[in-house]
Image (tube, rainbow, N blue to C red; front, side):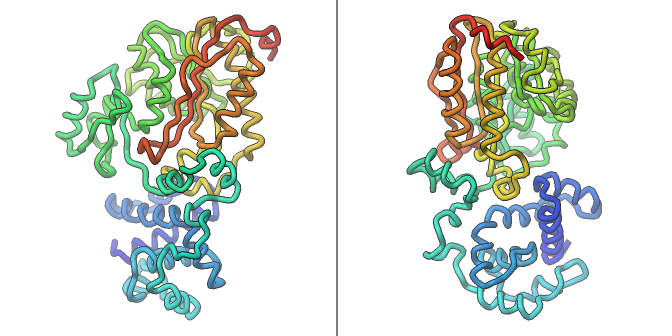
Length: 424
């Protein structure tokens, strides 16, 4: 594809993302599958252009709004080409070849002349726009992050690196690095996690032997640290209560050296189905999948007090993962914050019943909002006197740690649960 054709494809993909409201990575996956003629290098270039717009959406829209221009996919791309790439001649992209975007019309030519040479972040741009912070989250993030707000928001606007978790069931970090290097993938250890590797660039991992044979899994280093905080060991009985596709469940199984039992639960069968293939590839034979009807499924009541470790990786706004999902801050189609915190309270209360005396309960989110983190734990501890903090809370910062943002509270059950905890 020519550079102009790549721009044209990126505009098409952005239009589809806007129309469907689905996550950008999922839309791009389908977009490329429907266009088999787009090769690997072109897919990468198109994706970079798409995410380049999404990561600057607030700033681009601000420039367009000042000039009375509707923020369409095409207008945003033109603004990005002018404000970031410093496009000099519209004819070098628009109308240049069969798959290029159409030539600029008169209104677009006016926009071209208005934006040419303008800085992306002029002095009068509001701080919230500069930070790419949506209105629904700004107050909560400012209260939670305090003086670190600008620094953290800047970090969340940058692309996330590709992190790997070395599967201790099959290899060591040193051997995995060596094998990846032979296959052209350069990595560096992440100090904060004993099994984490950070890739140089964005390699095609699916083609490597290390990935195909389950020696490594793609997993953010911060997510790995949350799994470590559970303190799972060989022979334990462990629950990953909101397992999703099972990244943390796989990490727990490896920490347990394949001995004992990990029960991965979720209310979405498709997510658990994806875990099945990952389990087989990783050789994690001590993981059991269980579909629940709700957080108060009868299974929870029957398993009361039987587990050494319970991880609650609660559904949340995902503010800590905006580096990977820049569109999520603008296209949230799930429950609002009030609904989420109510769900988080119910999940935490229910999952706590599974913990045996002396066992550990870890509540975690990939959110930076205190309402979803410290406030939920404080409410739980007020209502559950049999639990107390076993360690200081874990807070993982995109700006400081170079990982997604995570929070984890490590709690311990000191005595029997209250009688009302047996209720469904």
